[in-house]
Length: 151
Length: 109
Image 1 (cartoon, rainbow over the protein chains, first blue to last red):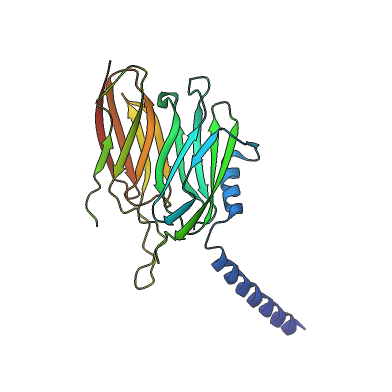
Image 2: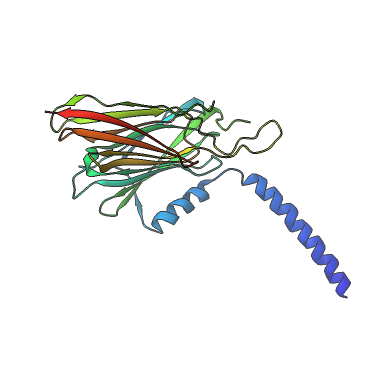
C-alpha cells in the first residue's frame, strides 16, 4: 500500500519537475504580467490614466543593442504641479525594468532621453507619477530586427 | 575594455535667466548585463552603472535608475531651467561601489 503511494508520488514529482523546467525555460523572458507586477509593486492597484505622455521610440529598430528612447510628460513643472517619477518597462526582455527617472520642478520640463537594449520585438510601457499622486501610462511597440542580448 | 569610465557632459556655458537648457551626458562603460555567457557557458557577472544623478548648487535636480537594459556607454539627457549661476555635479554609481563625477559651471544673466 505505502510502497504504491510512494511510487505514484515519485512519478508525480518527476512530472512536476519536468513541467517546471519547461516553464522555467519559457520564463527566461519577462512578459506583460511581469511588467504589471512591477507597476503593482510601486503603486498597488491605482488607476492608470491615458494621455499626457509622449513616448518617442523608433517603429523599427535595426539594432536592438542601441535603441533611442525619449519620453516627455506634459506638465507645468511648478512646485505645485510637477512630474515626480517616470518608469519605463519592456515586456520582452529578460528583465522587465529599463529605467526610472525622478524629476524636480528645477528641470523646467519633464523630458529625458537615453538608449536601451531590446532582445526582441516587444512593447515599451511607460508610467508617469505626478506630484498629486495621479498616474499616467503610455505604450509603444518596437519591431527589433537584430536582438540586443548577445549570445 | 576595463579602462576607467570617462564621463562627458555638455552644458551651455551661458544661459539667459529662465531659459530652458538641455544637458547631455555620456560615459564610457561596458554595462555588462549579467545575461551574457562566456565561451565556457558560464554567465558573465553583472556590472553596470546603476544610478545617474545631477544636482545644481548642491540641490538634486534629476536622477535616473538604470537597469541592465541600458545600452553600453550610457547616454542620458534631460532639461534644466536656468535661474542663477552655479555649478552642476553629475554622479554615476557603479555596481562595484565606485563613483564617477563631473562638474560643470554655468553663468546665468
